Structures are given as structure tokens and as C-alpha cells.
Image 1: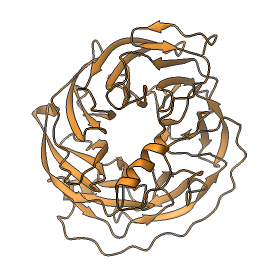
Image 2 (image 1 turned 30 degrees about the vertical axis):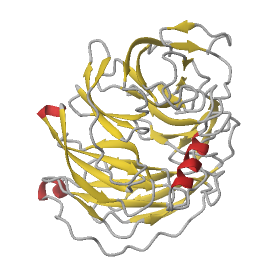
Image 3 (image 1 turned 45 degrees about the vertical axis):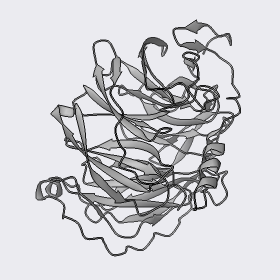
Length: 427
């Protein structure tokens, strides 16, 4: 966007130029965590190149064999009855620059009934695609390129053609999302503590960014060297976009001008100092959201006001983790809003919560082993019948059946092997 100057605006500053992101990277963070644990950590958690990428060259990895299931309640008849038939697409993000990492975006399918994953190849030519999102029309896949010179890449799904990359102007983009209208891509740069907006044309390809905002206020939280934007997502009402910043202990609310693609800050919500908020997931009702605090191993229920975009963060609650350290990654909420799940990295569990009072309360029901190491990201299938966990250090994707009546999780066979799996996107 713009001329390359920075102008203070509320708690943020605008800039058209790239930023180095300071001395704290997501790769070094994961390396530090690995030194604390007994497991070997994959040296991945940053990066992104902005050059135009070549046409894909599909590769076909083998599918992991399906193993026995653990004993747990069967899926409810109502949930099973609504399952789609036939294989469904699954896309897997990785780090291409990590030792033992992948070669691009993993292509797979999953069986909605059994949960079994089958490998279908790789979209190559995409650097460090650590987080993925799909366009609302289902035709285009978007990936961050999590590198020092941050970028985002578009891939046409019909023929796996890479449509090109665009610079975010920041460092180490780690998350992205598509605005519900399908015209704007939102991305968060962890290394530089900035968020960016890119236009999406009719073909699904990306244009040059229309705005970039650097989080300049408040000051970094305890133990942080600067802002670290970790998520940029649209609220369910569509009127506001929210950026979660781990470094400043703040969730920023912006209005997105849908004609120009520019951002105006309208509110800030602050966690307690040192919480390190990472990821916000909304309840389907749109009035509440659940915040995973990476640094202090807590979660919080947040009230959201659609009319103003203001978020009010509640008191910290338990993640259910017994391991120390533990770093919660993100929530997933069932389509009916009855249950929420949390990925616990370190404890290597999935916490299950009952959602009460129309979304206003979470009640911890317990945890189950994730059957992998360091669950970086989780996602539910569109019908809510399966939960996928991308386990970074074990290089696997675990799949669980979700009981529609109780929310209980039952492992669907042996986890699927995928190098440095950090994102699983089921469609």
C-alpha cells in the first residue's frame, strides 16, 4: 500500500516497506521449546518468498495404513446421517525449508465415514506454506510463505496451477483468511507484527496489497521484543476484521473498506500482561469467541459486540494441560456450537469443552491424547463429524470421530504421515 511512510493511527502504524521483525522469530521460538522438551522439534516456524512460482509438478506420496481405533462412543446417528458420501479434499501445510520438511502443499483426500486419509500428491513451487485457506467459491487455495520476506500465494485447484505470489511487506506471515465477500485476502505477519490486505480478482489471483498496518501500541508484553501478529480474521457479522497480536497482548479490531481494501482501527482489547494471545475462534452465534493464550497457557471467553466491533476478554481459564510447558494453539467449535476443542502443544492433548449459555461459558470436560507430537493446528470437517490435528514434530495428521451428542473424540485409526505437518484443511 502507500508511499512507504509510517503514520501512527491509534495503536498501529502504516508502512509500505518491509520490516525485519526484530530478533525473535517463530523458528527460534519452536527451537527453544524443543530444547525444553524430550521430543525432537522440527526447526520450523517462520518464512516466505515473494517471487512468482512455477507450474505445479505433482508428486504422489503413499498413504499411511489405517490402524485400529481406540474405544470411544460411536458417532451419533444424526451426525452420521448428514455425512457427505465419497472422498473429500484435504490440504496439508508444511515447512519446505525445515529439515525433513515437505516439498510444497500436500494434497490428499479423506473418507467422511472412516476418517481415512489417502495421499494424492503435492503442489510444488510454494515455499513454506505453513497456513492455508480456501476461497468461499472453493476454486482457489491460498497459502502464506512464512519467510523473512513475507508473501502469500494463490493456487487454482482445478489444475493445481500456482497463480503467483504477492509480498505482504512484512516478515514471517503465519496466518491468513479470506474475507467472506471473496474479494480480499487478510494476512498476519508474525515477525514484523503487521497485518496486510490483498485484493482477489475474478480468477482467484492476488493483486498488490492495498494496505498494511504495523502494531505499534501498546508496548510489547512481558518477555516480548515487539509486536507479533498471529491471526487476521473476519468477525461473523462481516463488518469488522480482528487481528490477534501475541507480542502486544492485544486483539485489534478494524473496519475494512470493501471498495478500497483499507483498514481503520476502531477498538483494542487487552489480555492480562504476558498472556500472549495466539488465535481467536468465534462461536456460530457470533456474540462470543474463544481465545487461546500461548504464553501463559490459558484460554478466555470473549464477548463480541457486532455494532461496534468491540471485544471484551474474560477471565483466564484452564487448558486442561498437565505438562509444563504447554502452549495452546487454537480452538475449533462444532457447527452447532455445542462443543469446543483446544489443541495443546506440549501436553499433546485435545481439550474438550461444553459450550454453555449460548456461547458465553466454557466448561472443561477433559482431555484426550492427540496421538502425535506438538499439535500446531486443528480443524473440523464441514459437517463437524471429524476433527483433524496437524502434529508438527511427529509429522502426522491425526483424525478423530466427533460424537454429535456428547462431543467425545474417538481416534480414527493410525495418524497419517506427512512431513512437518503444521496445517490440515479439510473441505
